[in-house]
Image (tube, rainbow, N blue to C red):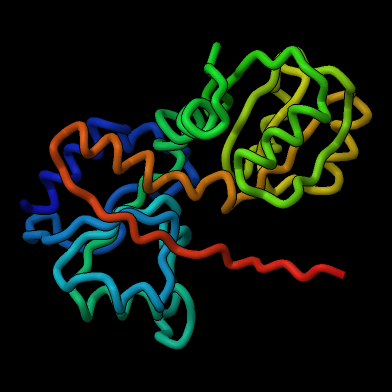
Length: 242
């Protein structure tokens, strides 16, 4: 299969035109006319992964390897070191980021991982009914996401309706129409404002909430008869208990 054929299929699943203006989804590295071998799926890419990636393959990742214009290609620094290795092994890279968040990932994590039904959607926000205490919801979320603990803002004790935005979505608090938001990368002042406005928050982590990208896309590609291999990157954070 040539790369452009796969690209067309990915675009049908989640149109690249839906991405935000600041995003860089689409072809990151490669030639649309090149023949591709295996298809790998990952949240991100790190240098250690190249040992297991077959030459002449394609990597479809969630986060774009290149977000901003490169003023310098220094192979000793990220992301130039990754670009060098990819070129050496003739590996094409395609990113599906904010477009896939809106069309697939938020709903997938909500329904397939957390087990709730999406009742409404507003861009990145996938809404669901809760009708239970905040503490019980937070504990359930931590358990289903396999997290030892979650940071929370207990803006209210009882949650009727909540929304999820995987990755980093606290900037959406101004348009939130729910009692609680599940998202990652919540900053201090966002938490403070939410508490004052009686909005509950559950910080589900950036990596922890988006690591389901490969399994979500793999399922969609299987439905189209395309075999893809999950080659997920690791969480850059580690945790030390005091």
